[in-house]
Image (cartoon, rainbow over all chains, first blue to last red; front, side, top):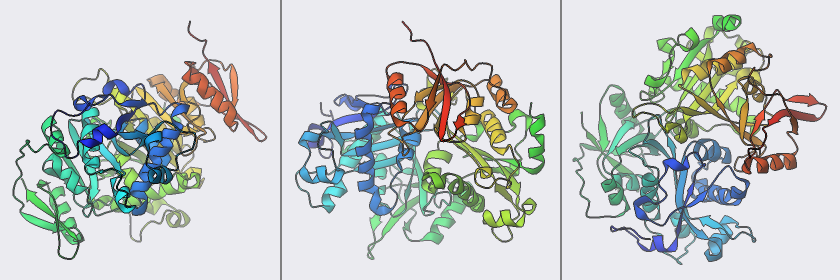
Length: 283
Length: 288
């Protein structure tokens, strides 16, 4: 079943099957039909029979993040995602998978289950409805890299994250990303992003920002491409270059001193091929 | 109860790494041991970078040889944002020169050097029936480690158990989940906590399939029993089975039994017999 509102690429939901990785104890806290889409195929990470699907999920992560040097070890998947939280995504039956994808995933010849093409991983925080986003993987950039044109995967990442947050019943979302990450373009679709850190030595990449937003059906719909949703976005006070470490540290110092800032809208490209991120002081 | 562990606290100080959101849920004086305000670190503040770097080293030294060192981005995303870290540390000037070198203490650094850590994160299922604006009842013990595992003598003996006992009191844990390897030396202190019910016995989803997952209801009795070991916990049922922890086929068979509804508990410490390590189990009678 499709969605009752406009999305960027409606064919994705007819091409793929939603899935949800969750333990039996976590499952009652999750929505199997976010926005009324087809009920998710449930994968129990505690059972032996889930092994191949979970290996393919790990492979998807490797295909997405391996080149950037932040692939997730399998124990992290289990300890940090599958046991305490959940994973939502879209998948395709192995029998309907494109040959190049079958090769990339190294799908076993005798496997006829689902193969994930996207996933969103989040971890519950210390209050009900409060989650930390951990991983968004999509086959879309991999297809572009390999010049696969069998199916237009535009919007797959945004659709997956929007449905996942609805499935996880998220009310308050937090996440971390790098100042130069293209994923910021997806994150700002949810609305202005509150900044909790601008420079983060506790993270492998110090030039990491921690951002958050309140989750509503409206901003989830907007993130998936519903243009009928209008959002108030304050004007930027200035633009921070994604390479400007001194600027990040200065902003971090202002945050630690009590300053409140948001990223109000999408980054913009610089003439040198870099990226600038808008910053607005809100108090 | 802590009396015979007090000597550790003559040398070590407790510390806490908690973001401002979760800090309000935590006990800053576990078992009457206060965490000094100067030893409470916000992982989102720049000034704690040197301490956090040494903590990362503790993890690399202890879990690295298992291929499970925690990258800093995992530490941030999966530990200090959803949960928090409790541990024990020693002032840099109280460490011997070799220990300072081993811990790569920066020149001129006079602060605390971490020697152990306990990390717990919330479990989604733990929010069942919990009032709004209250923390979950169930938590996952995500990491427990001590430098004594790789460098005995760097920290006082007993640091790991004391870190576990105090860490379990810092967090509002009613139901504890844990994940560890069958051959891990940490299985012994975990077994001292009480009857661990196996959630998985063989875990192909994990980097090391010979990994087990367990759950345990935590109560005062369990925490006291940990520090009284090697006396066996009074609630642990007598063992009626043994498992060879290196026998993958046996572990798979046990896992299949659990998936079929068999309830299995760890009922004692691992026992070494030459090349064999066996763990006593209690297989509960099948319910009709």
